[in-house]
Image 1 (tube, rainbow, N blue to C red):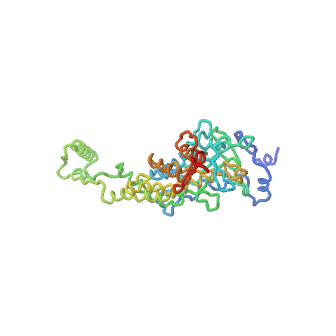
Image 2: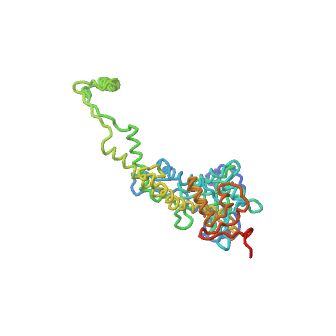
Image 3: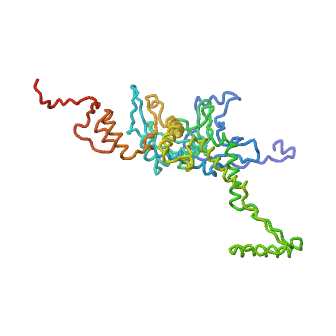
Amino acid sequence: MNLRGLLGLGARAMPPAMPPAAARIEPALTGPALGRATAGAAALPVSHDAGWREFGIAGASRVRSLPRVTPDLAQKHATVVAACTVIAGDLAKLPLGVFQRAGSGREIRLRDHPLDHLLNAEAAPGVPAHVMRFAIGYAFTLRGRGFAFAPRDGAGEVTLIEAIRPDHCTVLRAGRERYYEFEDGAQVHRRVSGRVMAHLRYMAEDGWTGRSPIEVAAETLGIALARQEAAARLAGGKGFKAVAKLEDFGADDETWQRARARLKAAMAEDADEGVLIIGQSDDIKSLGLSAADLELLASQKFDREQIAALYRVPPAKLQMLEYGVKANGEQQALDYKAECLTHWGRFLESGLGQGLLSAAERRAGLFLRHQYDALLMATTKERYEAITKAVGGPILTPNEGRAIEGKDPIAGGDALYPPPNMTRKDEAATGKED
């Protein structure tokens, strides 16, 4: 018998058996980088959460009555969804090519690189590249964080690209190394290193902690959400529509219920005729939308402007057509590309390039870039005029100009035309004697 039995305390209850842990594809993280975590009591453990998940006071306002703004709650506002879908959708429909910068500074697109197919055709079995890139772009603009899982084969080539939901991915750190725990598309729980994970972050003050514009401008979004909720209550008729003074209100309960039913039936029956029949002492006062209520609904335009400013999206792209006319539509498209898409697209290019291209490829001058010219679709006349000027410039050969339009080359079309102020010398047949 043990000491607890001698003292009459009884045997200690054994804790219930824990369920077996789920099978993990990768082995537990070990190595010199992680061994340093056990060197002292002050060292960070391997599973120390870096704090990039949505918890704490992120998105909270000093005004307690305002709702705590989170990316999930912000999606209830149509302007937030429109801004995120506009940016993510336009970037997803652009070709994202793999380029190499040569020593001379010339940039060449590598169409035969394996990533070109994964980024523009099929990202994973059954998943189009457009769907994958839209998912990453939408999560990045909404949450300020984005993750893409890109496993490699034995030769070091990326086999697929899979978007991972930011709220389902936990970032771990050991010194300067970063590791990621998540569940992939095959429902396999994984813990991987940064070598096979693209980590996108926005407004990162320390280079790692991504923040969303929604969480930073929490009070602005909180006011917008509170104003939208108030407008929804008014539109849904949650408040009193009218107040009625009944003649027999102070009588017994049965009399009051009978008078109330009589007045309600009279209002419902006589609504179509426009004449309401009530008692001699009954009085009805309408409580419809007041001038202040109408001003509340109109002030939602200001919320749309502020949200558009947070995402750098021109108002006309959010169907706020009072800010744009046909005369300046082309200039707005140029500003949208220069001020909005290139701003967000650069984060996607650098973040995906850091995770999808190996260190050796990045040192060799490889990088990712969106083809923004696909957005600026010119008319047939404008396109032909531009090609004609480029061929006669001379900038392009006739065959290069025909290739832009998808036409076959012609004989003698690989020579540049001389400038317009110079004559062409035909050496084949001059017709003159020496």
